[in-house]
Length: 154
Length: 150
Image (cartoon, rainbow over all chains, first blue to last red; front, top):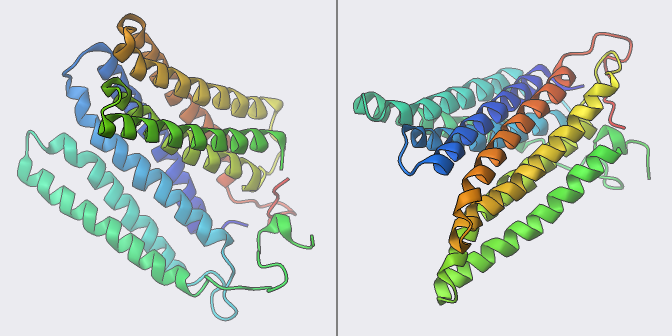
């Protein structure tokens, strides 16, 4: 069973996938129809949404669910830390995605958003590494996996 | 591993090989001065690696691994996966044609190929979201604790 933070991360990542692809489609259409278009501004938003919002966040959510559980304490580590990862990475993604759109009109705001995005993304990765570090271990040396599909199959 | 997952994963591996090969050709052609037009291969190659390999592999494994919905989905849900699969990979091929076309005299149709590629891949992403979202809801029935990959 996927824990709530995993479900939230995978769900948010899936939303970022759909949004990121849609924005990428707009950029590609701009490329196809004209050389210079304001839609090109969406390119960085598209990359940030898909790299951090989709790929990184989805990997984190699935890792939280399927890595070996801890022998003592909460089986998947502190759930508050997992929720912190979720909020940090999504704050970073939203800030990083909106930042290029503010670059022309409000460069100072755009700069702050860029710093917020960078710090939130970095903090999310650091907290995630802290949560997962102890779970990177071997549970069963004979068949070292805890994927449900593998259980009981030699 | 169900048929759909096998198709996603195998196609992802093909995209990985083709993407890496095209990227290498683009890089070498540009650096060694063989044919400067081949440098345009790098952009669709990156796309093949990030979308065709990474994203497709992830979606394929998620279809296999994520808990099944509480009520069995309609056959239509399975078709969504296949339609998304076709649109994603068709979009990748169109992207390659659209990027390479102008360098080899195909500027007229290249724009249409890029626009069609953009539309196809965006629809594919929304289909994948529609396919995966119901499987992320918490299960409340008698099989609530079962992870149920098939």
